[in-house]
Image (tube, rainbow, N blue to C red; front, side):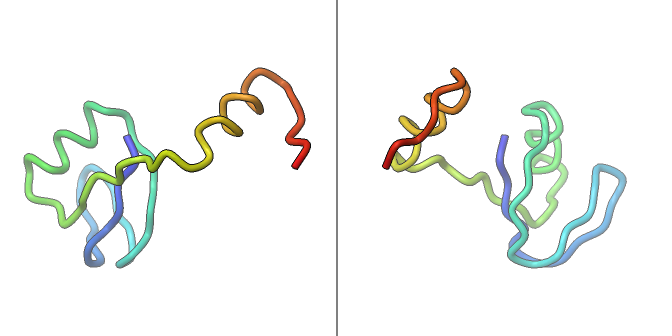
Length: 63
C-alpha cells in the first residue's frame, strides 16, 4: 500500500515528513489509517502501469 504523509509524524508504526510518499504492507497501512496517523492512501493513476508491468517481466522500456 502506498501512503502519503499529510503532515510530519512519528509513532510506533513508523515516521515520515510532510509530503513524503512511502510504501507499507496493506495491514500496516490500514492500521495507520485506523489509528489516526496523518496519512492518505495514494491511488495509482493509470499512467505507468504498462511500463511497470513490462519492467517486472524483464522487458526494457523502448520509448
